[in-house]
Image 1 (spheres, rainbow, N blue to C red):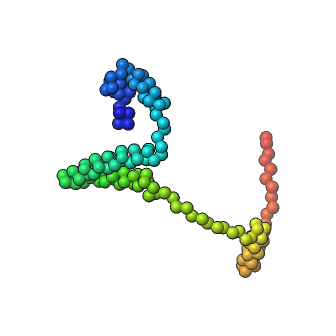
Image 2: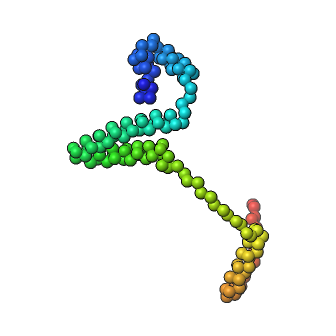
Image 3: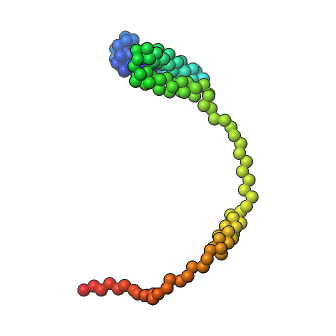
Length: 147
């Protein structure tokens, strides 16, 4: 019931507990006695829930298509696509593939810097020399006078 979104009060009323705290304690005691769920069991449970949602969504999608309600059909189609993708992930279709990459670095940083310096100097030597700016150059300093 909790999985369907029922409140503790609704669970207590439905199952005949005197209070929601009593229902919570009963669930806690059951959890303490029950071994933890295996990953495979959890995967099956979630896949079954998604399968039910997918079936229900597909029925509603077809109903919307038959009635000509394209907007609703499109919303259901998007939800169905999301559900199918989620089920594929649970089934392992999205599992990463192992890849091995070998990287060999054959030069040390000093050699790389030396090579770059040589290449830059070669580029600079191919440029025409820049001429000095002509005209009078004024050299000045600014002093602030406080009064």
